Length: 387
Image (cartoon, rainbow, N blue to C red; front, side):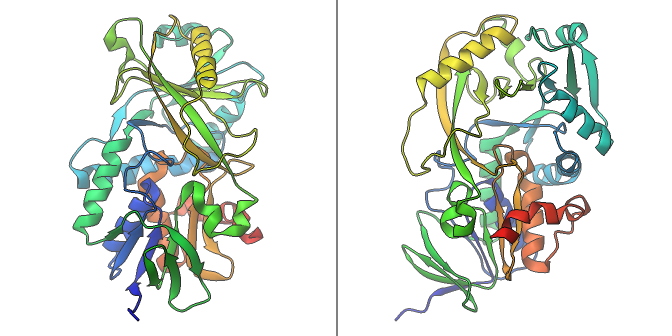
């Protein structure tokens, strides 16, 4: 019998958090780090693909405001230096909606965290600064000057390249069938053979419930339908620097919508932030829903200063949602060798390199080394304690 491959640390899931964690583990001197991905890297079936993602400091919870301050100040600049390219492209953020929406909660969280660069302005000033938007039902707007577009595809390619430079063993098209945490080393059964590892980090996104069954009833996978619409004004008006990244905080019956300027492919990006209404099968092959995209178009028609043009492209991605939309981060209650980073509820990409630092620290030292996280780590691990 061939002996199973043995690793000092193994990461399951090759999205942005898995790649960032594997890189950080290798840089901390772990001998033989492995990254296991059920598809090929950079595939379109999960949560990390796409040309661009929003980054911003404004959040509804001061914990995330503080973590984003760290990510913007430390982790993204470090990754850009290592990658030798710009990964975060400046684009002011704008948060708006009716009085019965969530704007006041966002404003309160920003104030509690003492975040600079976020300003409340009235509708007339918002229209002057952001002429692409009409703000028909928003008496006030939050203007976030820390906003930007993360070059998502470039980020994944950079992390992939850096992982390989650091000697990470990348095992693609390898599906994890079962974990054996009672073993020492930990057993990881795959469809290509059995692996062993001293430390295990699970960043499996929509498939995390398969590996940590107790989380399956706590988390819900929801497919998002994203459209890219032609801008009908001058082309420069749709690009970062002129067109903002934005989040609409609607009344409870209207929900949350978001979008980005044109970046990486033609068209402004927009979607409904879907977090409820029943779970979806992450293994199902589904095309974007035309009805959902029609609703996105209708929303843009109401909110923009000019109607959107034709739908140029559409795609889907997966959210893995916790009921409170908070991250699930921490070690399994009875085994500190196994760490989970999951349930980012559609807002995890912007934390990518910081999440890698946090998860690597938890796996190797039992603490993240990030004070903004340690202050709240018990809250992020609540779901795991129930598991």
